[in-house]
Length: 131
Image 1 (tube, helix red, strand yellow):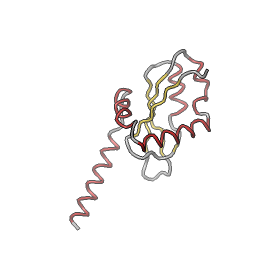
Image 2 (cartoon, helix red, strand yellow):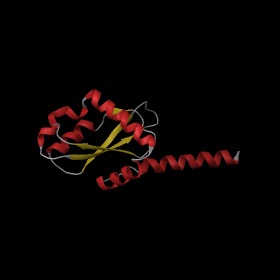
Image 3 (spheres, rainbow, N blue to C red):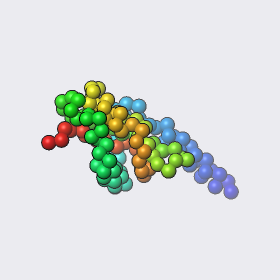
Image 4 (cartoon, one colour):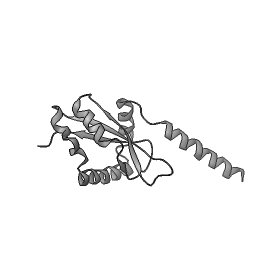
């Protein structure tokens, strides 16, 4: 019985820790992404998210590509509430601050998506103008 209580307590502490580990800056998000990007579970999720993104044309909303020259790198911070069926893109961090990056932030922030395999989950996207 004591072992079950200790395990449950450890799981509760880990859950609270992960919830508090959400990156607050682009650099923090990039560090998390670099640690996880070669994880097979991460790669599977990215493939599925890419299909989701392409199906709903999320990157085309608002005409963002035309708002400024050059690429924009995004870090999507995906979170999940215990009582929700879906995860949500809680924050969008960009490597530049311009009309294009703000447009992409507005396009992605708040989008509901499949729950990722672990947290904190940072999904990196490079937004280049289509050819």
